[in-house]
Structures are given as C-alpha cells and as structure tokens.
Amino acid sequence: TIWYYCFRFLYRRRVMKKIFISHSSEDKEIIGELITLIEGMGVKSEQIFCSSFEGYGIRLGANWLDAIREELTDETLVLFVLTTNFYNSHMCQCELGAVWANTMEHIPILVPPLTTKDLEYILRNHQSMMITDKDKLNSLNDQVTEWMGIKPNKASIWQMKCDKFLADMENIITKKYVM
Image 1 (cartoon, rainbow, N blue to C red):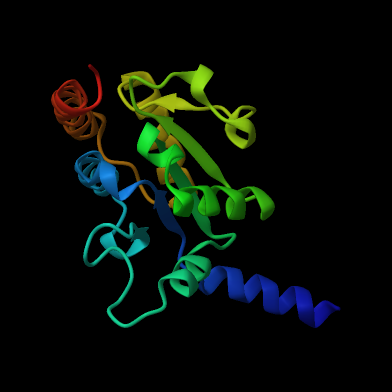
Image 2 (image 1 turned 120 degrees about the vertical axis):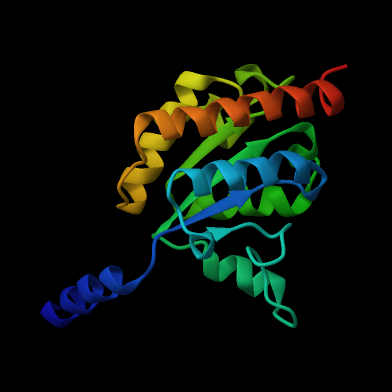
C-alpha cells in the first residue's frame, strides 16, 4: 500500500491542472469571452478544455465521448455555464451527472435571465455566481489562480480585463438572452 500512495503522489504532481468549461454550443459567444477572461487570469490555453472552440477541445478523429471522459479528472475544475440552452442539452446534463457522481470541484455560473431559483437539483446546494457580478468574478479569479497554482495578475490588470468582460457580457446578454 505504501507504493500505491507514492505512485498516487507522483502521478498527481505530474498531471496538469485544467479548467473544463461545460456549456451548450448555442452559447458560444459567451464562452469565447469567458475563455479570454480565464486566460486573463494567467491560465494557459492548453489548460482550458472547451469543446466548442478549435484548439481548446477535441482533436480531429478523436472519440469525443472518450475525450470528455478523459478531461474530467480530479485535477479538473469544472465551470458550468448555465443557460436555458445548457439545461436543454443532453450532453451538458451528462457532464453534470459525471461531475456530481465523481464529486469533482465545480462552480455553477448563471447567465441572466436565469437566477439562483433556476438552479436544478444537483447544483442547488452549491455556491453559484452570476456571470455579471463583478465581486463574484473577483472571487472566481482568486479561486482559479489558487486552484491552478499560478500567480495572479496585478490588480489593475485584472480589473481592466474584468471590466471589459462585463461590458461584453452586457452587450451579448442584452442582445441574445434577455427579452
């Protein structure tokens, strides 16, 4: 058993921590902005998995179910970007179930007009955030940089990136999500 713990310790040290963005492909515009924000936190592009964007997702010729399964490990922080499209996607529901079954680290991110009242069963008991809440985005920055083990950007640089993200979100949400 001591070999098991030694192997597990060494394996965990060599595995790269990642961010997995669980989302509906219908919400691609929001997700593109979120990727830019996460990279603005200092996360490298190869540490972000997002199936809707070339270079962040599944390699050509790969079995996409196997690829998603391989990405969902103990070294992955899952960001659920919750919209009506997310709740209507069978694949998103599968990802949600896999994360719940494996008790993985995750953060529910609500996109207006959804509110915390719209959180469904599995996510209802987890601290969530609105994608338009600056204070929560600051907390997300802190949590992601800590999880990834990276040095955070200077506050002024982060705030500039966060403010741009919020302005872009307001435009996208007003145009596509709020009637």
